[in-house]
Length: 374
Image 1 (cartoon, rainbow, N blue to C red):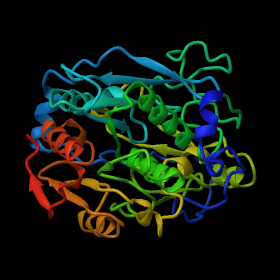
Image 2 (image 1 turned 180 degrees about the vertical axis):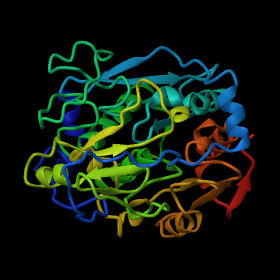
Image 3 (image 1 turned 45 degrees about the horizontal axis):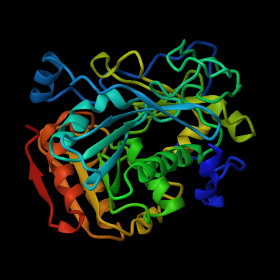
């Protein structure tokens, strides 16, 4: 969006795709047979309370979807959960979904924050949910969602972005829009899983001058974090974890200058999927939803951070997450949600309560604590 360009630092404007790898990959043998898919169950079986949630009435209905025009004209989808009453002087949280997810899946957190006086803007990241377009015309964000691995690109291509920092610029557009709407509010960014990786990249590139704090929910900041062992599939030259599988041939082609190939596929059990999931990703989105430097990004956090970890997270090791939190360059709070999976954190109203407490008082600090999810 042209009127936002002056607010975006030159360091994150479009430029050539970096060649750094974001996945640990190993070249393996190839054969003519198609590869078997990775095993199911890669996000872990739902815990008892999560099974009850899945069998229950479902997610709260979200508010009407709105759209913010991006720099290239793409309608970026979002929903605003506005407290009643709201006078524009309280905290505002921008919540960034993780890879293959979209805003409606975070309705428990949106409703829970709004019920406690926090305005929550839950976004669909570019190429996810309704922030997609089936063609360059971009006239139907709810149109046909097709995965054609031909290296072509258009605004809103599912699982893709123009360059590795376009997601960051999109997120900054939301920040600027909220500052214009609610100039007396305090603003925080929150991210879940790879959405937290995008928040970390935003903090690296833009800093925290616009923010009073950040929230990281089961954060996947960079690909050195997976707990589940690296797996290999001898057919098709693919490698990765049970959850994320990279096509080495497509990745090599992307690194040679064709970054809009679908290089990564994600795998989720049916209970974790809906029709708007985006399960295929290009090289640019791999880079764009992760910290650019996994060794130094911690120091970029200059204001308080709330870190929420799931005790039963099948993707991220709890002890490693704790060590990552301790490397941050700012005070904060580390909260463990008992008997909760990587996804289940986003279904917990108790998590929304903790987020609201932090939003009203980011300086509260405190030592590590554990909470029940319900």
